[in-house]
Each structure stands twice: as structure tokens, then as C-alpha cells.
Picture 1 (spheres, one colour):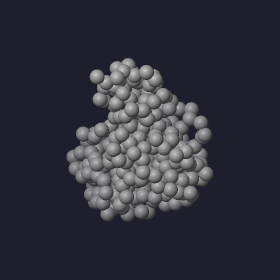
Picture 2 (picture 1 turned 90 degrees about the vertical axis):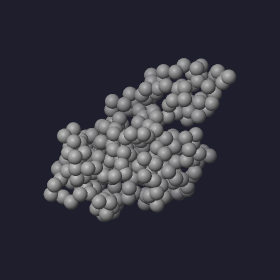
Picture 3 (picture 1 turned 120 degrees about the horizontal axis):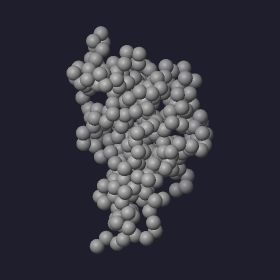
Picture 4 (picture 1 turned 60 degrees about the horizontal axis):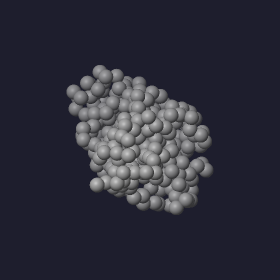
Length: 296
């Protein structure tokens, strides 16, 4: 339906399961060729902007980071008309100056996940998107301005290292990651960012620092209870930032995110089967010719 459309997608991480201020809300179950998303998308208007909200870990937080169907989540956002995604995520701080409660806007990722499906392609279609700069430059500026206007301590830039989980790091792992000069550690956003780029969606991470991982010897090792408490203390702030950012987002995209596949598709459309063309229509539609080769 035409009314089931949005401009900005919000993916909520640990602690962020709903957005206050959404008006004219309705739930939509989006079917995708990659299976079911984490749950129903909540559509509505936020500060007058049509948005779609999806809790990453499902209603009641039932999905491990490795169990999240990232492809279905991003595909669902694309199907709903979303062109920009604001992703909210709890992270551990790897730097002393990033204290629990601070907001980090990473501009790079280092992916240590081991078995996730982090591409829409395969099955006879090859594409290699540029991922040198994984964060949308327009959206990170909006989030920075929104964060500062909300009174948050904002750290712009830095590396988000993405681990598999669900266990937190060992001390040895934490010290190695620290030696790589990363800013924060999490379990979800690198996968999302890769898929968002393939789907030609702008993507930005708002990382909520909850702890010092376990490298900080003067701090007790991170626990779920500690993470949850910091999240509860900061969830209102994160929602305030989201509302401001949505309102600040310019109407037109001047970044290159919307054309990420333009020179990335290696496979000739004539060599693609009708089956895979149908499956990837939501991703490749504007690049596929009307003629196709029948599968023998």
C-alpha cells in the first residue's frame, strides 16, 4: 500500500524497543525473499517525517546478534521506501576518553564476525560495492549536530570493531583490540552497514557507550546488568537525538550511497536466471534490463 512508506528507518538495539513521539503508528509485517525480519515494522511520523522503526533483536529481545536476520531487516526497510537508516547500538568503550553514557558516531568498521550472511549476492550474481567509507557523510553530520543540541557528549569518528558474540571479550582479546586503536566494540553494526550499502541506503551508527569492556583494570568486568542500567539511563537521550536528527536530515541525498551498485555489478543481466532476478528485484531493479534469459 502507498501509505506503508517511510523515508528514514530506525533500527533499535539493546534498550531501544520503541520510539516515543511517533504519530499515526501502525504495524506492518513485511515479507522478504530472505525470510522474516526481526519483527513487524512500526510505521508512523516523527517530527513530521515518515519513519519505520524495527527493534533489531525482536520484541522482548529474543534474538542473539548472530541470530538476527540482517538481510531481511535491511530488505524490509528498502521495501518500505526507506533511503536512510539510523542504527542505534550498545557498545563497549575501548578508549578512556569514551566514558559510559557517551555517544560515539563511528566512521569505520572492522569486521570479526565469522559466519553471517552479510551480502545479498551469490546464487549466480556477483557484485562488489565500495565500502572504503561505510558511513554516510550526510547522516553523520546530522547525528553529530543532533547529539550536541541534545546536550550529549559526542565523539565523532573512530573504528567500531564488530565481534561475533554473544560472549563479551576476554581480557586478552580486549587488549589486542585496544592495540588496534579502535574506539568501540559491538556485535551487530558492521553486518548491517554492509547490507545497507548493497541496498544503496545511507547508513549511520549511533553507538551508546555502556562500559569499558574488560581492558580497564580499575573497572569490574562488564556484565549485562551494568549494560542495561547505563542503557536505561541514556535511552531518553538517544530518543531525543533521533527526533532531532530526523528533523535535520536534508530532503535530498547528495552523497554517493544511492548509487553504490552503479559500477559494482559484475554479472551480465543476461546471465542471471529469472528466479534470482525476482529475488533481487528490490535491490537490483533499476539496473536490470526488461529482457531475461529463461532458466533451462
